[in-house]
Image 1 (cartoon, rainbow, N blue to C red):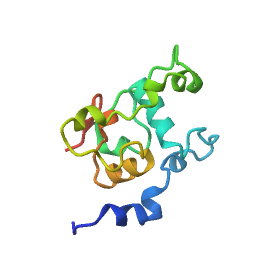
Image 2 (image 1 turned 90 degrees about the horizontal axis):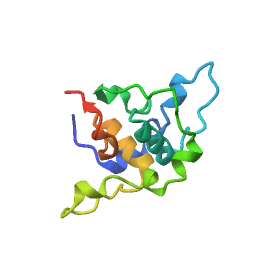
Image 3 (image 1 turned 135 degrees about the vertical axis):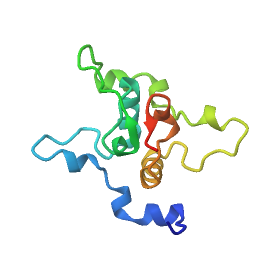
Image 4 (image 1 turned 90 degrees about the vertical axis):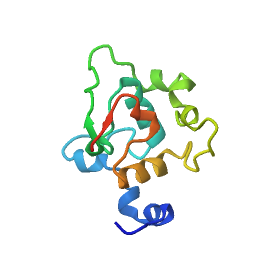
Length: 126
């Protein structure tokens, strides 16, 4: 693959498009569609992967349906919305996409990887 800059990746509307729309045909639209920070927080809390990252993962858990908290309950705890990249970057230069979830997801999806926030429970395809 020829070298491509992050700016070029982010300038392509296809890379920035929410992939949930692809799987929502005939279903009501997801209330978190296009809200990447909240979507990642909800899926991380349930230890599942959003649709946009599933193709990059070897195996991912299916979130339990019983006893689920509502999105409002998940987002009420600021810890659930905090960017999880900082522990991995200790002693390193801060990531330019930290707290920019939509851009981070687009970059990781393009390179077929997983961001640090979900890497703790999902395995990257080799």
